[in-house]
Length: 255
Image 1 (cartoon, rainbow, N blue to C red):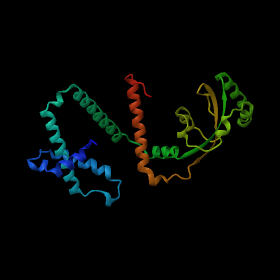
Image 2 (image 1 turned 180 degrees about the vertical axis):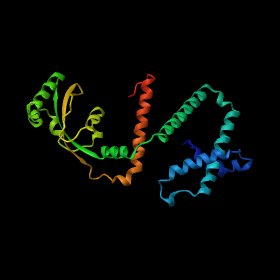
Image 3 (image 1 turned 90 degrees about the vertical axis):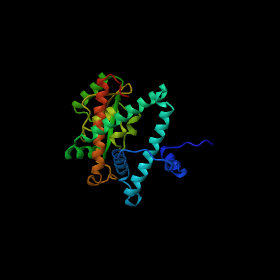
Image 4 (image 1 turned 135 degrees about the vertical axis):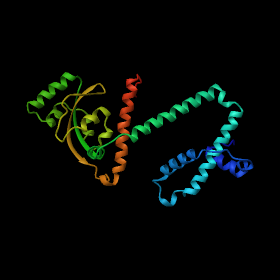
């Protein structure tokens, strides 16, 4: 069976066979080594201390790795591989991916969130809701039903007047994130007992929803224990919104 070598495996293979030691290894700018060491430390900082590599070993391994890829790059240049059209296309794609990632990281590092925003986001992420719903074939029918509610008809009686099979399936607590996105946005702004102010169009039907009950997920960890994770998630959400706006402004359809 043909072997496929990763960069890490190549580093080990070349070091073991003495190819790097046979001559003078390529000089690597210390800034490049420092950068990769910092990345690796950040990647492993969540691991238990006993599982993290010590600084000296880490720097030595990264230096060997960078020398390896630099040596292989030089060999590719000797063969003129960088001039091949397919190689150039792949390089441009990799370059674009790299700078796109740097831009996303820049947005994350420069996105500020307040303590109040973190609390609100935490409440949303740990919230469980129970909805009641009535569906209609047209928007006019839904608005006529709203008129009945305004005249004093209870939502429960409205459900009996316009029954559908999905009503029973919603009689349980669920996180809003499990709802269709357009509905989750609406539900996150609702308080217990509130009915949607306008019919919600979904799947060719028009719905009225009532937030029958709301509670915190009993399995949710306390805010103080997950604050940093909540901050990271909220920043990522804000960044995603910025990117979606940028895409739309430049004629790219967001799926």
